[in-house]
Amino acid sequence: MKKIFLFAVFFLFFSSVNAAEIEGKGEIPLKGPTVKLFSVGVDSTPPYSDKINDGTKITLNILSDDGKKCKFSEINFNPQTQGTDCNMPDSSRATCELGKLKDREYEYYYSCNNDLWSPVRNVKFTIDFLSSLKAIVVSPENRIESVIGTELNFESRTENNFFDYSVQWDSNNDFGWGGRKENFSSSGLSIGDHNIAFRAVFETGEREYFVAEDYVLVMVVPIPADVLGISSFEIIPENINTESTIEINIAIINSSSEKKDANLSLEIIHAETGITAFSDSSKNFSIEAGSSENVSYSINLDSELVILQQGNYKINLDVTEYPPEQNTANNHKTKIISVYEVNPFVEASETKIFLIPIVLFAIMLILKKK
Image: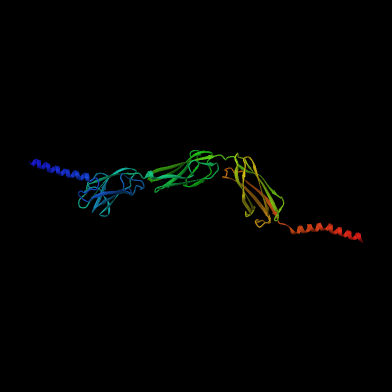
């Protein structure tokens, strides 16, 4: 009978312990304070992982009711004699500083005390902050087509760059092309397809590095055939003074197989000072495929719209297709003209010379009558 009684006592004791252990998988209402893991680093949702911390400030953040001390360990431990103390700003919170952690999976154990220690609990988490280090090409856009010699802007950014880092741009086609700045400009890519690599090398520790990279395809093409061009440019008269009216005649040719809309702009600037004396960009027109268009200007240099004195002037012509063409070799023409002041003394002398024969003829008539 005694054996049966003892067996019943032991059965009830072990049943109560097992029930408590099963219940302890959530909050732990056992001996000591109730303890619950709040977060690992900034992550409060299992499975815990940390993708933004730099590995030096990873913490276990624990909630407890009326706790006096909390401890943690990398192995299962006896908190009465083992483990590392956590910081406790008050009786309900504990922060356990884990120190510098590398990228991998971890398992830590913890327990809290308020005269009695709570059962030791464990937590598993992953440190994965290196995968969040990124190198990103902002411009140029992927698969951009660019005419050779065109200057392109290469711009980038990095993410979670709490480490020191260096950058490098490279082309798989042009050895030696590239830059060591995050943003720069270049017109030096050769004709062909270039797989442009942007790499950021992060210094994650002593002699430890992590490389993040991004790519963009740049297609460099030859200069295309000319579409619009100025085929002739004539200025009348040859001798020009400040009171002249000049005629400017231009012929523009369309070398393509399609009708093109275009604009012609004219500018007269002082050759030495660069001051604009006259400008006009109001000439809009269409040119049929394979044909030409004649455009004329008549400009009175004595007009209030023209600020022009004696001197040398450049007449600049520019024709622009819509949308703008890439080959503009024949879209610009320049001529130099010399403008003189009107000389009133010369005109007076010329008038006197013209009157001399008339006066002589009148004298002869008077003498003849006598």
